[in-house]
View 1 (cartoon, rainbow, N blue to C red):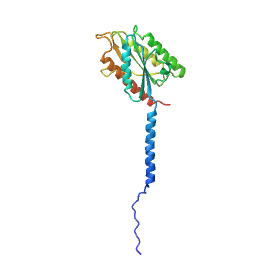
View 2 (view 1 turned 135 degrees about the horizontal axis):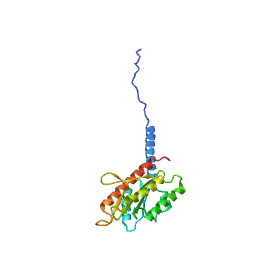
View 3 (view 1 turned 180 degrees about the horizontal axis):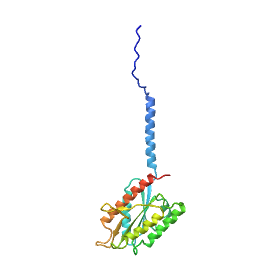
View 4 (view 1 turned 60 degrees about the vertical axis):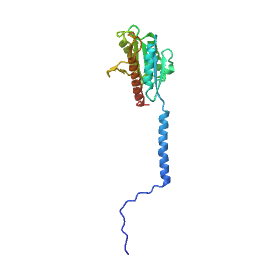
Length: 218
């Protein structure tokens, strides 16, 4: 009797329709759960707090807020320093403070608010601002009114509280201490260029804060 030759060809196993359907449903469910978790993730919270006497610092603060709000996944609170509550401070992942220049320094109201930040965070954590970001902006009546000194004073306080300080970027592409505006020029007030710098800073601040929080360890 003639024997049939054994075939060396590999025959792939047959996947039955029921198995394929279950696998497809599992992949779809995994994708839905991942999308839901991403959608439910808590947004990064940024507090923009300012002291303004003539309205100029408030206008610059609004531009900072607009820039920060342009970043997806970020929630921005705009408050005057007198309106900002302890919960606003404690729940913020990043804090930006705006001040007019008074006698070459922060205004008294802005300084008191920075002291409040230390007081609030000191009650909730021994590490104060560890893992949080901070920034500063200011307005002054003249070019040599003390804008650098005012911003450096705020930055020094934030560094003492262990914040990560984020600066701005000027028109030439170089880093800066943060936005500043000379309001006593002609015409007086906040210019379009000042607003553009503040929006650019707000966007950068929010984007980097989001990156820091995404990489933060629990």
